[in-house]
Image 1 (cartoon, rainbow, N blue to C red):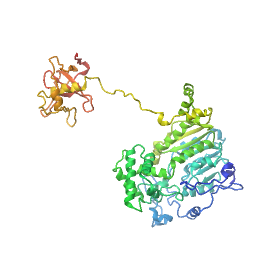
Image 2 (cartoon, rainbow, N blue to C red):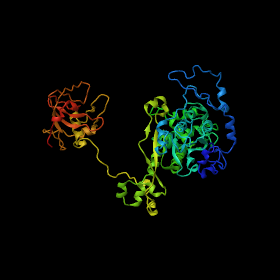
Image 3 (cartoon, rainbow, N blue to C red):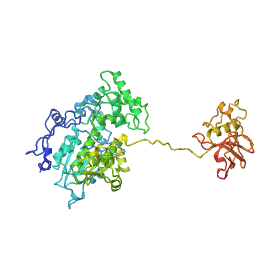
Image 4 (cartoon, helix red, strand yellow):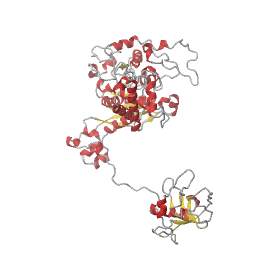
Length: 595
């Protein structure tokens, strides 16, 4: 039975798959030929031996310890006299894993597992046959959920680059012959399996909680540990080494594209601050998470719009770049869809907007023209622009079955890290349209040429009023009848500021004629009746008192932000021009003055 998983692997997976030495996410080595083998074993190496020898001290000391609600999760359990025995070989790297944090809880477990299992593979006993892949083993939550629903003939392969996750997966591999772990990034799925061999693929893009909570990994901005951020600490370089050589422009690009994607200026400021601090610190550089967190907090002036820690998004951006997470997602989506059987499904659990956008873009790039646009748009090059799939020889299309499913409030209450999670269900479909001629593909315009800002500027304003200059001149004359010597500005509310008239405006204003008009040809807007009293104190300069029932003449209606809701005119009974609120008069039954 142990040989069954290997027998189901395609020939391409049994040959040696050489890993690029520059791949920061690299696994344990290469996959040897499977001839006569009973399992897929990675080539032995120094780091593999180290992992095996460290299996004892590196285990999670809090494994299996549930967090009781509103209680001490360690109550009644024997406590060690010191944390040192749990630090393993990384004693100098930082704190031991915090005791009060709960164990890792897989997000959207049932919502994702149920969607990769097709009814066509269901047996009479309710179990499912087929070959399935869990893209990120983590601590095995989704893998165990899949195995519970699989038949004895089914197989499940899992990918992971974290050596500690691989050690945990080896335990499950020893317990269940249907399961096999591959110490590879999930972006390699297209190189391990042949096309049309997988029945379902699950990709969980989130970082395992045990990784975030382990200070030795250098992921968390709230810890004080060496700045590492690698999923596989045996490959690539840590983040602290990368920060020593990165330029300000490169770092700004990373922070903006993978973190502060809605604020280019603050991303640039953060990058410049980090580079300057790097020079100030000299050779040690920014080596610890707490130091980097404080620098980012300083650059952002310790404030954010969403009440999160100021350093959260920058830490996220560096982690995404160090582990090439977005590039791995693109490779995994392309490889998974190629390896799926027709109508097979790929479920992707995303946590960030950038991940959701990448999934959506992948779907758009693999959609066929709909019937309406296919008939209306007759130009081949334009169809290629709208549907990029027509430029390729890909033999499948991708369909998103429904809107992403988000975590319920019940799940978020149990696991707060699930609040931003969402399941995207993608299905592989048969392609019906062929690739368009090369001349049409070559005639496609670049994206920047297909979008242009409109040249026509549309008018946006309130109700039509006389020319603003004339209205202001009339209002200024009525407010300051003495002429330029008057120095009282028209301000209609305490603490706010409406239109203030300068001495030049007052000097050039024309007095109203007997009919209410002006020499400039502009008269009052309308007359109305006051429906409530508006009292004006002696210190309220520039306001017109009103009494209920007074006939009111309106010369100017406020149109700017501060003037909205205010009118300028006077009451025929009071004879004191100035500002008054619009709701103090009956505007519905007003009488518009003739020009």
